[in-house]
Length: 305
Image 1 (cartoon, rainbow, N blue to C red):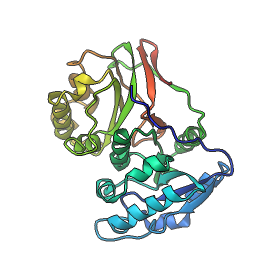
Image 2: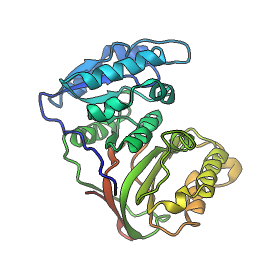
Image 3: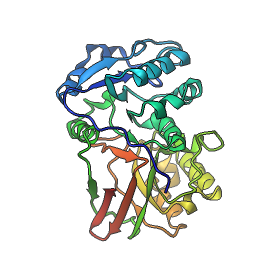
Image 4: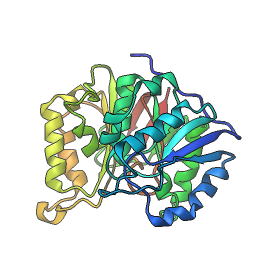
């Protein structure tokens, strides 16, 4: 296993920067209720200069603006973590504009999911751990969002050691150990052929989730990964939340049965029912961390090593 850099965990009194790595926040974000959530954790909040900027395409300023906010936060000695306010679209444009060497020179926790999967893929090439976790855009997204917020706080403070999941009829039993990688399926698969592609050339456990995709798109992406050898090279696979999938009526089944069809072609443990993705609760995962996955009749365990 390659040696990854693990940023320092936070403590009360530390400062985090909240900025937009991709799409801009809506007008309602300017009420800044989300700031009070982070401050309730004992942290101070700085905001990216271009957080509330908006240009056509729903971008938070230009690609250079977003990159400048990230680079400034990385260079700022007071800032201990960077949280993206939302995903949306634009991360790949931001990554292509950044001086990515700064992430290694000034390692800090980077938090986000969905479109931020592109950044998590980048960190895999740089050898950095990161947090696939809740973002301020979801801080008030239903009754279970408070649980997601508390889990994110625990992740930032280094308190997450493991998760357990309930039994699922589609899970395949077994045990595996490897580096936890992945994120949003459509974004992860879109990095194939880019400089940020993860070739799974070491022992890895792949996590996937997605939202608002068509059944045929999910099928196509999984076939692409299967034919490219990515699924076969994974030591285990964790299936997160697949939300608002379109076309289930036409396919006469739900998206999880489609995913199971693909998983049945593999010879490795598969954990279904992981509460991570675009629904609440949304647990935080340390991507880039070596983990041990156990899938048994009574449920699953993800242990961070």
